[in-house]
Length: 200
Image 1 (cartoon, rainbow, N blue to C red):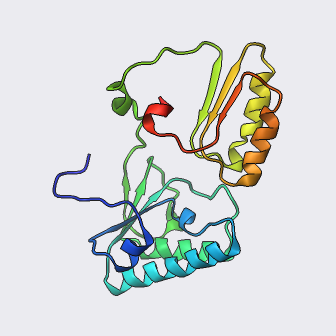
Image 2: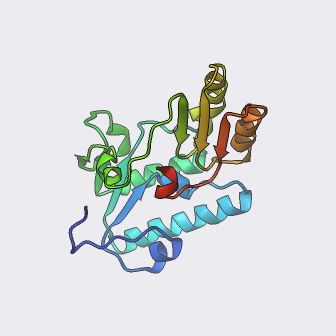
């Protein structure tokens, strides 16, 4: 829904460090700091520091969308510091609901942009028949969402089928889901990112 005179680009480290742009918008910035290996984590931390230096040097406005008041996973000391620096440097914050609890994110003005429900986007596509007795989980699969418990609870009900569709956060989460689904014929796992047509 951006106006024609606004051009957006998906994030890339190269674009962020040496590209040309007027505003940098961060959503889930902690994901830019996390990786499964120590080497990748270090590289991301160095790159993130370079981005912050570049933004300050060029006085590029920073906008941050705040999804949660507190992280779901425990952040490392570096991650805590980096996010505090990012929030402190922000020219503007976006909240998904009208909350007054954003004092921990700095003093930048807050704009509320209500979280979308996606119905408008998908109603233009062919309607698919609902399947009675089917439970579907989709999206990023992280440990705090406890997908194995959803599988266990759903498979305890006779005739219930389960579809788990999304990319697991790491191998440990993936292994736990596969273990919970093992031996259940009515559980279908699609442990990867799905495009819109597959998701529908």
